[in-house]
View 1: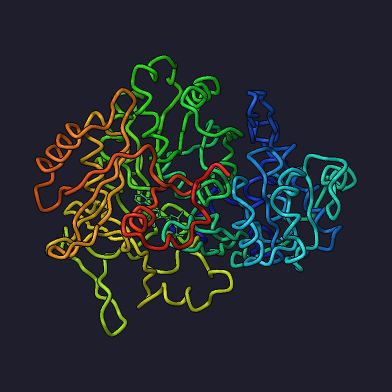
View 2: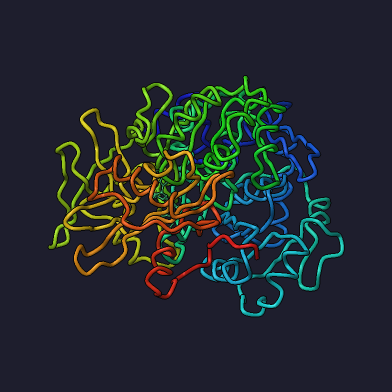
Length: 558
Ligand code: ATP
Ligand code: MG
């Protein structure tokens, strides 16, 4: 569906004169319309306290924040960063920034000083919104090296640290009526850093026109409807937590659950039950943790309000899809996309049969292809079913990233012959379903075979003792690489040579000797990014005794 067509339907208004602003679509038109008293955000604090914000209230708060920025002289296109936990303020800052025509860049609040500094510096932040504690602990010492950072606004404190200003004080003084900046569809709205799974994170720039993809995909791939209670567990520091944790559900007039706390099986089931969540969007790592907690545990909760379950971020093992169906009453729908694509591109959408283990079909308006890069620089499209190649997308969909901030050459290299090249390897079956093989960097070449780590990991997680598996290629003088698996176990199972032998045999039976792991190592945890993705490149670097490269988004307790 084209941009013009979607603007003609009820989901989007547009601004007079051909303008488009995400914050108008997500907030203002509801704040002044039928949904004004509908709960927009239901914020659950770590201690369980619940605070609701209606669309009308969110409209006023975001107007105030836009006026605060205006009062500080912050203009269109300047970068406003946030470093705060999942609280109402984060959403106010996100949408108020876009109302002002400035570019919003959310950072995950658990980052350490270095990754924070790197991102503020790369993005040329002129405003940062954070808490007094985070500022003192993580930023104050490096502030002198950030000459463009003119304003640090502190959300929780009327006595802000030196060099910062109190946001509550500024908000009280600001008018609750703002005139929204008349942005155009191609004006930048968001700067999102990638997860850093394969290297140093890149800052992807997204425009206001991306909202067209957000809304369409949420309807088709998440079955999200106006009035739904909806929970996306991703932090807005990752693109999922913004595209589908803020923008899409608010544009559709849903009630968004915002949980300040991190994963806890009892808490999460409790939220699904107590708030009667209809649509739930989460990640494979969380699903695997719920599976680890067991079916019995899940059965202690009433999840009857749930209508649709979806997953993103990593390949979703078939085992997890089926577990959803058996234990939660609905299968998980896998969705594929990236920070660069801005919105879901491929999914097991609501209206089609799920093939467990497959990412599904391209969404309406998305043209996907499978290509092989040629020596001379071009690409060749592969149309034969079941041949592995690189997943490519025809450039030009509304939420396509428009730059890597400050890295023009790197951006240019992502596009060849009108295709955006994703860096992920996939195959397409005869029914048009796409199957994830692995990131191009993670694929294992062993004795003439191309082995995707996902296939091996999925086979291992079918064994009742295995919680998670991370698979890499280990250099081998004969086979080039051999498959090695790092495995964590479910509670009640302990590492032993007997179990190792059993798992090796189990995998060989399912995968065949050429693909099955040659070695299995038990570990307590797998290294993951902050967004919960297994970092295979770290497993590999450690195995080979190499430098670990950029670890700024590694999950640590710091
Ligand atoms: P970086 O680009 O910095 O290495 P990243 O690629 O992990 O990090 P994101 O943009 O957050 O950063 O993640 C997108 C990637 O996540 C995809 O390219 C793909 O490899 C993986 N991914 C996302 N969804 C799925 C899925 N449903 N199945 C398989 N892989 C997925
Ligand atoms: Mg990537």
